Length: 253
Image (tube, rainbow, N blue to C red):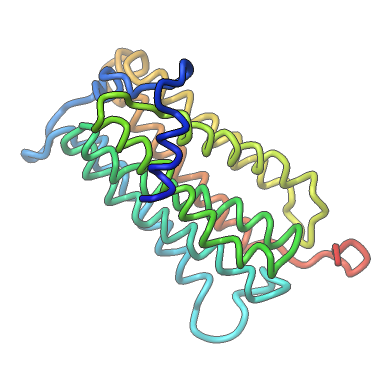
């Protein structure tokens, strides 16, 4: 929490501080099913748990290397943390959508912040320096968590500021875009851009939540956001499952 307090002090009274709008919690599809409120926004989180668990099992099947996905076994660690975060997102997001508020949104954002930090560490580990990336992993995850803690602390004290958390997402997306440019060790380098496209699609669905739901009241944009984000997580897993080492002359040393 100390990092969060420090960031809060830097942001207090900042003219560009971004508060969490009350309208954020007003989702289009509030339909209950079997007595469960906001059912589709809750239930659409299930793929996060399934894909997160699948990723964890793939990374540590019990014996040997998982296919030929890693030149150095230590490169697994950031991806393992990423899939743990994805798994936990299912429960944090479901809890939030069961009863939307800033208090429950905290538990939605915490596991997502873990994924952001882990992804940045994964790119550093496999494209810049393995040892440095692995050592940086816990610090990136803690910093990412601190951005959420700072936001929630600021909300509790009446001057909510999303700036640090928003910056975390922006810089994570920039790393996602930069990954194909950095010298790769593996095939399927451009899968990162597909993940970016799915992330962007999820954001579009989120923005058009009410408008999409108004088209027949079948499904809301926010439900589709969850599904698109889950596919992005699956695409990372798919990349790891299907990639192979490049010939030695293309591998960065």
